[in-house]
Image 1: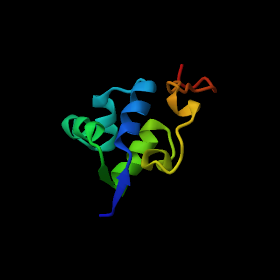
Image 2: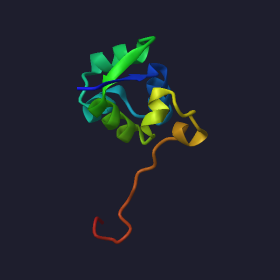
Image 3: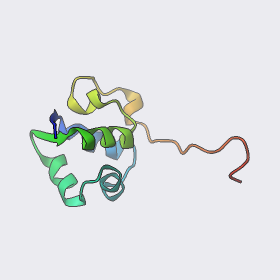
Image 4: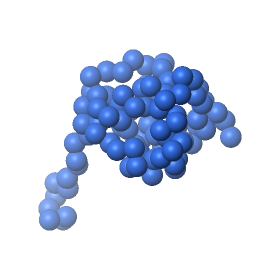
Length: 91
């Protein structure tokens, strides 16, 4: 597996701004809560590419935002709005 360097402080910053709990993010990424907590506190860290892609998808940000290659923009720090079905099939 390929390990990719990340900016761990960005994970917590985006997660808390988006109002995603650590248990939910851990479940969506395949990490344990303990591993995620340690990751958020780490100075430097790496993640397997698959976990990184899952984390970016769960946080609704591009992968380069988590690696530090892209700046965090205001949109990255807004809560994720729930998407609702607009065709009426879901009630």
